[in-house]
Image 1 (cartoon, rainbow, N blue to C red):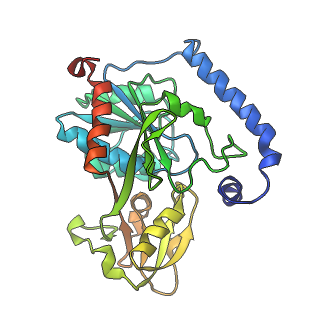
Image 2: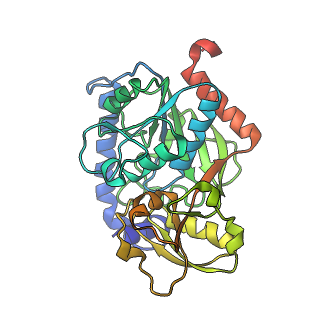
Length: 338
C-alpha cells in the first residue's frame, strides 16, 4: 500500500481521482481542527521555555532529524541549553518519558534515540508534546525543539520551521490520502522559515525566507564500536553492497551511496520498520549498509558485515547565519528588540 501511494503521490500512477473525496473530507477536518485551536475552543499549552517547531507539510522524510541535530548543535554553541520533544513514533506505550543513551528503540522510538545519542542533549517523548516538554524542565533546558510538531497544535510555539524535500516537493499537490500533503501548501505563509533539502535555489517561497540544506556523509561506521573506527565512504567505491533503508524516502539514501561510487543493491523498507536479523540475512556475504536511524534498531544483532552511514546537515555560511538569526529573534525577543 505504501509503495502504491508513493507512485500515486510522486509518480504517474492512477488512483488519485478515486481518493479525492477522502482528501476533501480530510481537508475539512484539518481546517476545522486548526480553527478550533485558533479560537481556543481546544486548549493550547504554553511552556515556560520558548518552543521551536521543526516540521513538514508532507508525509515522509524531509531531513528533519539531521536538521534537528544541526540546530541543537548550533544553539548549544551559542550558550543555549536545548532539549528535544518527539512523539516517539512506533514505541510501546504513550506515557511521557526521558530518553537515555541506553534506551531501546522499541521503548522510545528510533528517531528520539538517534537524537539523544548524536546530540547528548535531553530528549523526551510523549503523545502529548506539552507534557513531554515539562519533563525537559527537570533537565535545565532553556529552549525546546519539537521534532515533527507542526501539526501538534496543542503546544504553543514561538518559531516554526518547515522542511521540504527538494527532489519530491509536494508531489501531486493534493491532501491525504490522494496526495502527500498533511496541510495545504498555503500554510507556508504562516511559518518563520522554509528549509529545502537539495532543491532549487529560490530565496523565497510563499513570501517566507528559504534556506538550502544538503547532507554530507560522515563515513561508514560499525553498528557497535567507537566512531573513530569510521571508514571514508569513498573507500568503498566500486564495492557491491546491500543498502537497507527504513526511512521516509529510502531512495535518497541509495542515491547518496551511488554518488560515492558504490554498486548498490537497494532494499527499501517502510518508515520506522522494526528490523529483525532475518531482514539482513543476505546469503552472498556482501557488506550491508544502513541509515543511522535503522542502526539504532539493528545494534542487538550487529555483525562485522553490518555498517551504517550517518549524515550531517550542512548549510552555506550565509544561510546558517541568517537562519539562526531568525530562530534567535523568535526565542530571544528581549535581546533582539521584538
